[in-house]
Amino acid sequence: MTVTSTASPPLSTAKSAVTRPLRRITRHRGDGALAAVFIAPALLGFLVFLLWPTLRGIYLSFTQFNLLTPPRWAGLDNYVRMVNDPVFWESLAVTVEYVVINIGVQTMAALAVAVLMQRLTRSALLRSVVLAPYLVSNVVAGIVWLWMLDTQLGIGNQIIGAFGFEHIPFLTDEAWAIPTIALINVWRHVGYTALLLFAGLQAIPGDVYEAAKVDGASEWRMFWRVTLPLLRPVLAVVLIMTVIGSFQVFDTVAVTTLGGPANATNVLQLYIYNSAFGRFQFGYASAMSVALLAVLSVITVIQYRMTRAGHTDLG
Amino acid sequence: MATVTTTSTATTAAPPRPRARRLPSPGRVLAWAVMIAIVVITLLPFYWILRTALSSNAALTANPSAPLPTDVTTGGFARVFGLQSTKEALAQGGSGSSIDFWRYLLNSVFVSTLITVCQLLFSAMAAYAFARLRWPGRDRVFGLFLAGLMVPAIFTLLPNFVLVKELGLIDSLWGIALPTLFMTPFAVFFLRQFFRNVPREVEEAALLDGAGKVRIFFRVLLPMASTPVTTLAVLTYITAWNDYFWPLMVSSSDSSRVLTVALSVFRSQTPQAGTDWSGLMAATLVAALPMLLLFGAFARRIVNSIGFTGIK
Image (cartoon, rainbow over all chains, first blue to last red; front, side):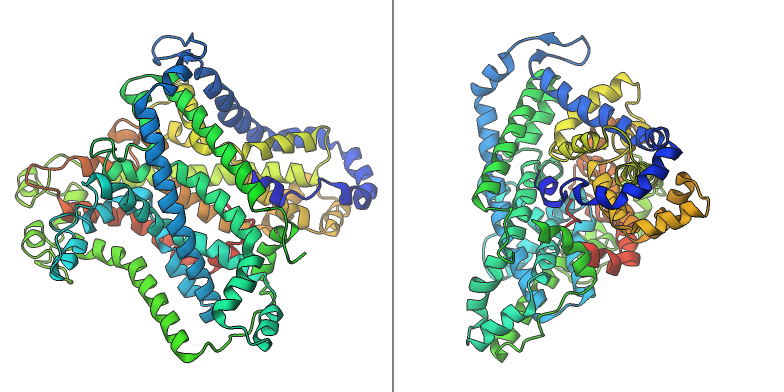
């Protein structure tokens, strides 16, 4: 949604004046037919695999559907069940806990990396290194950290043990599991987020810093008084994007804890998956998907309003 | 938010850089120390994959904290590519079940290539039609595409599964590729922005030379767009390669298993004695290495073009 408003300039207002002479040529050549051919594959894909599934997903949420027999209209049954389902609320709570930790740590770390890169070096090599974890799948990231954080043999616990502390059951303890998964995903995504913020930092003119320096501002003060305020619009867009992505967490959980121990990591998307493919309750799963969609839309609107994402102090 | 639109061009064109300021020395040292720590945390898992993949399972248990590979062996890789007999595999801590990562590797290459080539071609064609052709309802259709950006990809997975099942494409590579084969709103949007910025004169000159619009698109505009198209292609390829949730739904046998799904299956086939970490890390390396190499080839270009139109 943000991307929408971000990057679409007012459609063809400025342009039409300029292109009027050409239009005669193009119309003469019959653009309509050509356009139909050019747009056809993408439009087909859009209608069949994006628009139709979206509408169908909403429709299915009002039905009983087990995939084998045709969906049966059930009105609000799924939603009533959802509201009364403690497992749903529990998994929503687990998901929110995950998002808070994941986004909190990731945003601060990415901001730190971006600012450090801006102030220290512009090396493309360093930026490539920071981006490296983003190139491997969530599955790879999950499995590697599963091994490194293994309670007995993992290098993490070997180091903890070497300092004389007790081993930590990172992924097998109810209290540790969600923070651990949240941090694994920070590892994978922090570089990409940092590069987006870094791009935003590049747009801040250097003389702003020069002026602040002349006024005797310290690096610390400049960060709070110059960098952060000027970065705010970019930060807002990045936050909306990453929060939406974070709510969809599934892969990492699916390869590390499978929702356990005792539903401690049963994030919403995993519960939806298990309802659909484990119990063949596609209607109920769709209802929960719609709920997630609604939550994400509300969050987007609130965040957008709160951070005044549409405005920049640079004017 | 006009600034954001222009950022991506601005980043590549190196905006007036804040001059490399001298931090007070201790602060600068501390800053570098933090940066180095971040790099170490970033890269350590990659090294650990390699170190574990080259160690034998017995050595891993006996000496879990050795920084270098211990009892160096390529047994893990042999298991992953199905080159060991069941007996051998079991003796070395494998699960003994048959796995053939060549096949999964080929499946991943097929699906990712198919998605990247088709999605980019079709998206570029649509982007051209939106940016440069005149036809009734153009802006309204484009608005619809933009609205598509608002639907989180994950929401369409369940209904798309139902659809692919109705099409009889469950457990096939085409079923995995199909939903993202034709376009993503992002790719259309991203390329449309580029085509809009190409000066009209370029096209007009070609038109006067008697070239048709189709020819102009393929011979003039598409080559001009090679930089954004390459960046987008690499990112699309990596996204397709790393996708797990959708292939997990669609694939149910070896014939359509891609690397991500194969890895999770491998992981769940834990033998009684404990996980085959050596084999699992060898498999992880096989899954991750191609994307690291691909990225390595284009790293500078990609890193420089991640700006604000680069939002995914």
